[in-house]
Amino acid sequence: MSGLMLPVLILSTVLLGFTAVLSAAEFQRFGHAAKADGSLSFLVVGDWGRRGAYNQTEVAIQMGKVGEKLDIDFVISTGDNFYEDGLKGVDDPAFNESFTRIYTAPSLQKQWYSVLGNHDYRGDVEAQLSPVLREMDSKWLCLRSFIVNTEIAEFFFVDTTPFVNKYFLKPKDDVYDWSGILPRKSYLSNLLKDLDLALKESSAKWKIVVGHHTIKSAGQHGNTAELNLQLLPILQANNVDLYINGHDHCLEHISSSESPLQFLTSGGGSKAWRGDVSWWDSKEMKFYYDGQGFMSVQITQTEVDVVFYDVSGEVKHKWSRTEQISSAVL
Ligand SMILES: *[C@@H]1O[C@H](CO)[C@@H](O)[C@H](O)[C@H]1NC(C)=O
Ligand SMILES: *[C@@H]1O[C@H](CO)[C@@H](O)[C@H](O)[C@H]1NC(C)=O
Image (tube, rainbow, N blue to C red):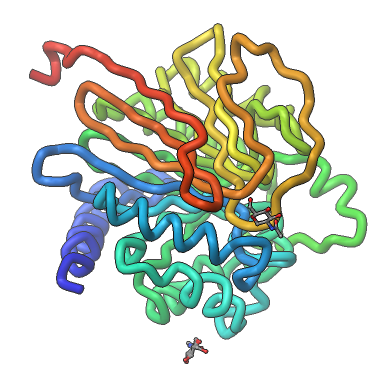
């Protein structure tokens, strides 16, 4: 398990360094060293915590195999970590039953970086963010909005649930934990301002934004109008390469004609097969899979490789972007 200690050590060391320097910024910052050759690889899974049910365990087993093959550096969770209503508290057995006991493969004992989904907001949000969970399982880390810098790529994790009007205006029988969010207007405007600034200051070759909600999706939930209006222009203005999300329980890749930005949905961590897919322009829709699975990403200075896998580990879709090394990097 010595491989596990190093990233954790670097993580905490850099965290201390950054918080001192950048205390004015809202986004907490972490450093995560890339591999010795400067490359990076990671897995992405979303919408998963169901105590192993709905193929969650089967997806976890395949993640373990691919994680080993790619020698992954970390795992990203796109949220809806615990169904149906987040965690009840730090002692909720669901943390063990849906996370620790499911993702048991040696290759998955790396740092997990997780955002919150709308279902997580129906529970005790502070519990999911609590260091108590990190003590129970050191691979866990969930925060509202934060930044992970690996030098070659910088990751901007965005808390998307508070953007969505219907959770505030028409919550039906669901009770959301908005403590720490209100007043909502200034929470959102600060978040967007800080994100824009952090993206502008980033010198990373690849910029990747992660949130729970979709920007573009042909799945059950479809596009998130609030994010198209408020978040998308910031991503486009700052040359973000990938927007990675969950929320729709599928695997999906949409490209856009307006910018190089790719929209990648990895929300197939457990319950899937909704059967309701909307029409989408085939020039933009690169891939849609209405079932369980996950995604891998491998990054070098000149290339990004994205692969989607189904519940049996079969490759369903591949996409690559190759770029010349700019003189600024050399
Ligand atoms: C589990 O995966 C298999 C293979 O894709 C699928 O046939 C089955 O319906 C899935 N089970 C559930 C509960 O989604
Ligand atoms: C998690 O579950 C396992 C298996 O049932 C058990 O041995 C372990 O004590 C549990 N851990 C916690 C922190 O509850």
